[in-house]
Length: 156
Image 1 (cartoon, helix red, strand yellow):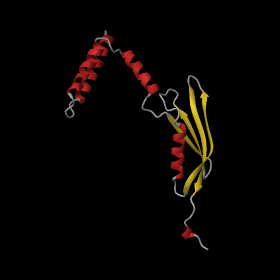
Image 2 (spheres, helix red, strand yellow):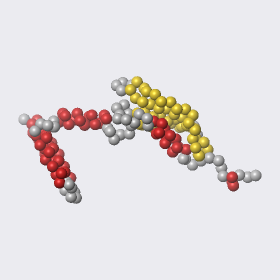
Image 3 (tube, one colour):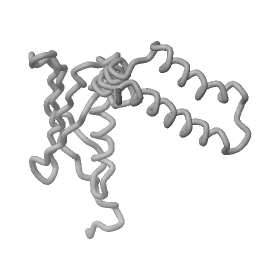
Image 4 (cartoon, one colour):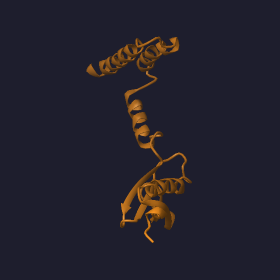
């Protein structure tokens, strides 16, 4: 008997929260239909709690707003860095971005005080066959080039 009451109370709580948000400023009148539509969809069975939970789970895995590549950086010496890029297992585009991200980070590292440029000493792209999804990876090493001291500071 408690189970049929739970979705209705959850829908009423969601409608109350959404209606409370509509009191800030003067929203467009179309937004006022959202709480009513949510209550009607849940009470008529168009949206079920398991269906909503499945939608949240799919969104958590896909997460369209998350970056496509993760970057790990390791300092190999005072002037050398290794950059490792890994693409999301489930993605929607971004397959050709690895080199752009690598170059952008290399330029940031070369912008540190005392350095003028960088040199790519190694670059490799590939695919690692992980379970359950294969994953694009890219590895690269850079060497930072020190800036020359100003000519006025040199002693003859």
